[in-house]
Image: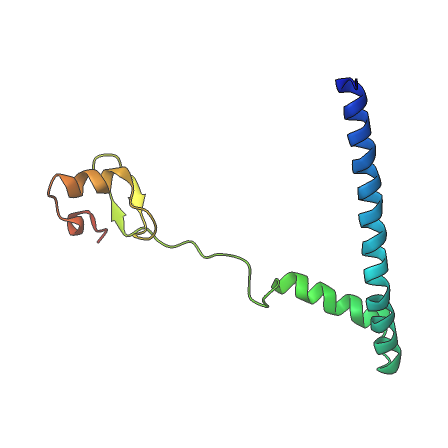
Length: 112
């Protein structure tokens, strides 16, 4: 009968074998793509420097070509008791929900 330790060792060996197999498959899949890129670069006389510059500019812009920085919205509501604020977007904070439940108008918390 197999012990826990030997069963675990067999499984770990199988995992390592499968990971090596996956790595080999990735290399085989990428090889024709890289060949195609190199051929296109040669056909269009694109230099490594141009490619590097293009990659850097896409990193700065982000994946979709738009700025990645999110602008911070100014608060729209303020709790006069604690000074807590809320922009009016997303899930309302507890103090707004409590005020709604108490029958207070949300507009009474508007920052003017």
